[in-house]
Length: 101
Image (tube, rainbow, N blue to C red):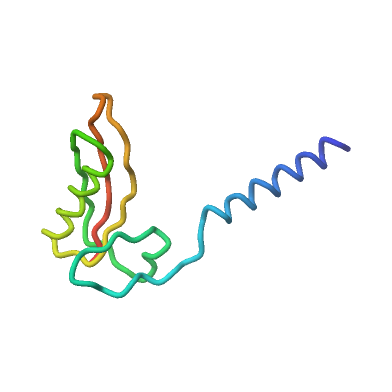
């Protein structure tokens, strides 16, 4: 009896946690004269222009700047950073993202 209640409580907490992480859709900010980084929940109704990756030696900010430069070159209105991770080589960061026109 106690285990069933505990299992029900765990399931409720897990499902509640998922809804917190999901986030409700929000509109993207107005288009500016430069590419803007947006979050995943702001992409509703926008079409993906392409996927990009960058590999930079340095900090996560360095690789984010590389992605922003690629977004400027592609003339994208927005970009979404999907992944920032350190590679096996210490100090080398990899980033994946999407451009949105």
